[in-house]
Image (cartoon, rainbow over all chains, first blue to last red; front, side, top):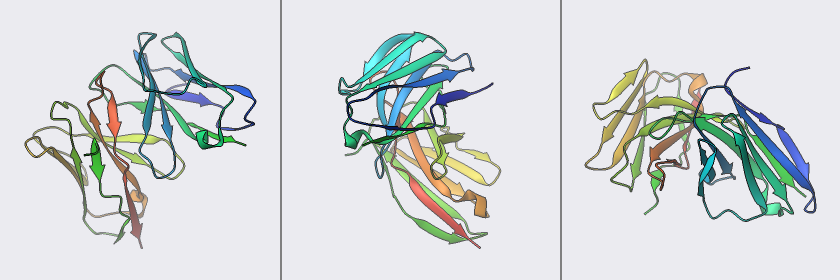
Length: 112
Length: 110
């Protein structure tokens, strides 16, 4: 498998549930990212990992918790989300700064 | 001023038309510029990088004006398959991360 793979593609969860989004990249990239895309808003950067270290946390609520166990894998752990957290969550990777990103196909999350 | 600003459109054009998208960015220290394309309910995909000298890829031409902090994308001979949202992207976060515009929606009609 090549590129950036995200699972699941769709997720419906209740506000008291705990779930995790998974991202895997097979491109040998050093940086991985989580973005949130809500309707009529630009992509919002949530977290950045460079060489498995978190280098940016863009004021994201603590109900979102990232994990990067190695340079190929990235998780987003979700806990007690709100309905306004419903959105498309996109994972991306890049070789480093100043390079374009390759995105996964995203997880469409609905919080009920 | 928003970090990356684009006309949201929609641009509705007939097949074969030439269409131009504009974008302005606020961070004068930005070094990397891109156009991405996003189809409905899909992930963004890199269309082309934008270089200072301007660059062309088939029917697509991108231009950068650093003095005006302005980027453009020209699509010639539009095809139905060009219908999508076009995202202007600039690096400039605290770690040089990419910042995305809201996108301009293009609809090419027969």
